[in-house]
Length: 127
Image 1 (tube, rainbow, N blue to C red):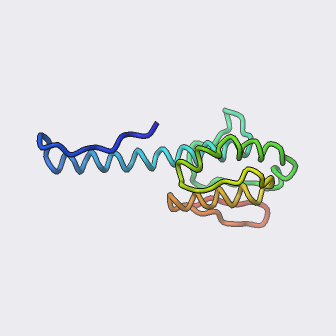
Image 2: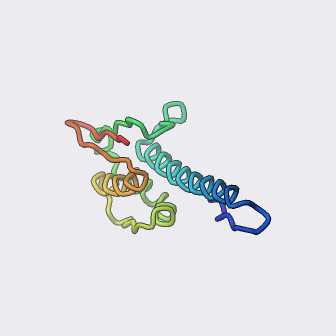
């Protein structure tokens, strides 16, 4: 659940209000970060003990996903509403391929100034 926007009241200083606003901005970005990380971990179908804990230098090996069309579709459907609400994008659940899932991922990564770099056999996520 996202934090509520802090309201300014006369009983707090402007500096205190600015600190609360900054904390709010950080919590919003943290929520987006967590949604992206969860989406990637679910998309890659990782076990709990090997899930990524941050976005730095994630390698998305596409060949591992080529035969998991149903899993990719299920993951996109699972996250559809959350991705649309969190990132203000439209997700088409009828698209059932890895390229579309990667397109969505690249779009939401841009929100936090991350990008996917295509290497020979995988994609690398960088900040």
